Picture 1: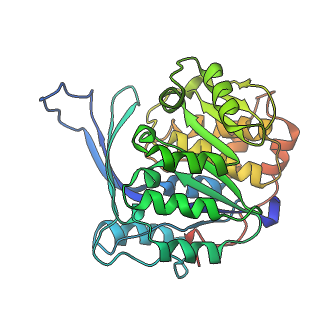
Picture 2: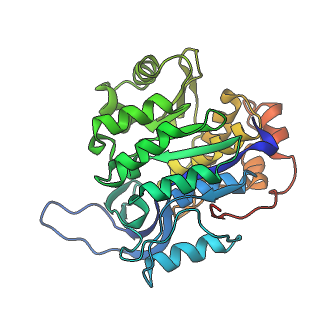
Length: 340
């Protein structure tokens, strides 16, 4: 299903990012003075925002804390575009998690993450999510939730019960090597698409070469699952279900902040596939969205439809189908809120 039937449902990890711009990372035991520091909602929120800006209705189905700063801030950002009751209850005794993101002068980012309420899925939460899903939903799974010692096995159990009329997208994330093998195996067995960067792909396959990594992941997952290996400015390696690896070039831009680039790519790909595009055209659009995002400061910097259309001007590889989806009209009504 696609188009009007599709809705992005994120299972977990809308958190707070403490973003610090530094000249360079300090040596071990050293220190560095940040030139700028901001608190913003990040993590999976970036994927939700990127997808909705390109027209895909998007809701959050993860846990959320009741802390006066982090939990309240995340809910306020979700509520900016509409809010409804959560399928998953708030966590009374745990605040929402946070991530310290160090962004150096080259635009590269380094993370340290403290998991919170968003990673502590319970059996009751999982049952509520299953009851709230609709046919045609696109369910996004993050490796951060899978890596949590208590919540990870519960999330794996939920993934195993997802109905066949929803499509499952897995981003194993930077903590992929921390995900218990049995939990990761369940997620890989159910996912319809896997998207990772080169580092994450290397941790999963032991291979440094991006096309070889994509081919190895596709062989591991089987012919019904598609694979994306994101290679930053070099673009992306796509293996469509049952197909061969294809290199989709990136766009050359001057990066000022790579924080959230992978999320912008994922959100754009989900929106474009959800809008009915074939995977190759969707990756072309996602590459452009990620390139746009790194030219802006901040994690949630994915483009709107109009911005992405303008960014694609003069790009001969941007197929008519991609331009048609992007020019289809304003973002449809519907909240970027909590699943209910």
